[in-house]
Length: 97
Image (cartoon, rainbow, N blue to C red; front, top):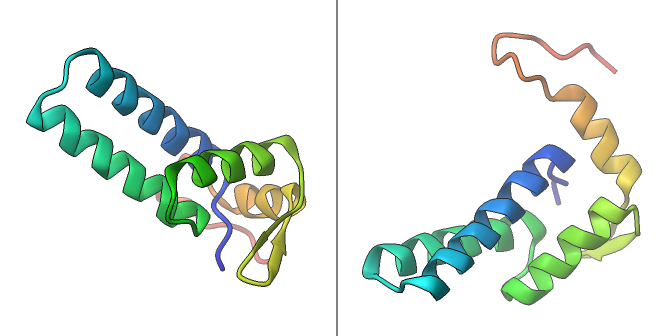
C-alpha cells in the first residue's frame, strides 16, 4: 500500500472535518455530497471503509504510531520519507534516493 504524505493526510482530515461540520450545521444535498466525497477520500487514503477507522488511522500515523495496513506496517518514518519526495513546486523533480 502506498502511504500518503503527512501533508496530504492533514489536508484530507481537515477537509473531512470541515465537510462533517458543514453538513451537521445546515444539511443540504450539496453538503451531504461534500461529506460523502471527503469521507471517500480519507477512507481511500487510509485503506479503510469506515470513516471512524480512517480518522483513527490518520491520527495514529500523524502521531508516529505504527499502523498495519493490509499486512504492511506503515510508520511515521515511511510518511516522512515520502514527504521529502513531495514538493510544493509541481515542476520540481525529487532527488533520487
